[in-house]
Image 1 (tube, rainbow, N blue to C red):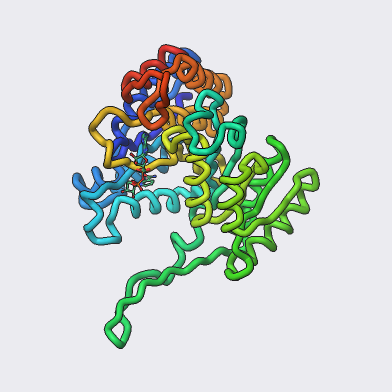
Image 2 (image 1 turned 120 degrees about the horizontal axis):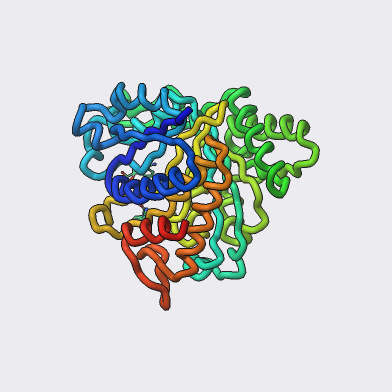
Length: 357
Ligand code: NAD
């Protein structure tokens, strides 16, 4: 029976990178006889323009019915000043929480061809292969109460709540340990347990769950130290397991180790491995419409989707190998370009990957 994917191209560079990812999807669908179908829906700023809300009911309904979701990026300056509760990013947070996509997997892998594009010395990053497992539907991004209130003295005060229940920590911990079992069997749990009680509990539960995986070596690190270690000696890490806020920041930092945020895919999974797949970067309004965005993170997100949701490892490998081949050919979008390589635009990069499959 055919499986269905809902595509949410979104805003900014979203439609540009998604056009190339869709070409790659079409190619592997035909070559590996995957029997996948797909359709487009609105999310983010484009949805606000068309319907007044960032996550229209039709989109949510289609996403619920789909077997997987492929997302470009949402947001941009055009919608930055509208009422906070209907901003594009709220649509993204809502679809993640409505679909219970609590496990965010962000690999930071350095393609050897891009070692010189990293801001760190090649010997520090060569061979880098980290997996950040970030909790995605809890913590301070969702905690109540939240808002901006006016105090009695007339001063305004912003406030958010960082909150994690034991069961939320436990289920993401299991995901981290299970993935570590398929890798180098090392989990680093990141917290700020010296000042934040919520992460003291995080550390305690991580330790408890770790006992169920005796083969996995568990260690703990404060988030500030982890941020430092990521640029000092990133190859010490295998699986980094952390909450929503710390994971957001650390994964962008890890992204830069690999040369560009334009290279990094991600998966957000529910209990049944249904997932939403998207590049780690945003809608890059500064380069939108110029045809220069790097489509590889989105293309690699297609590979993750094929691997994790559709269990099509051969097709996923074919895409990843094709990306390696185009890098070998010396093709580079502007974000990963270095002297001696050939600068290409979004479409040329996408079509080169299709040709290399
Ligand atoms: P961003 O990731 O969009 O851009 C950061 C920098 O990286 C920019 O200089 C951009 O040009 C560059 N960049 C990003 N993706 C690239 C690519 N594929 N190829 C080449 N260069 C790339 O982050 P930002 O500027 O902080 O945010 C811009 C908008 O995106 C905001 O509205 C933000 O809310 C939104 N955003 C959305 C998501 C998402 O949809 N998941 C994630 C992060 C930010």
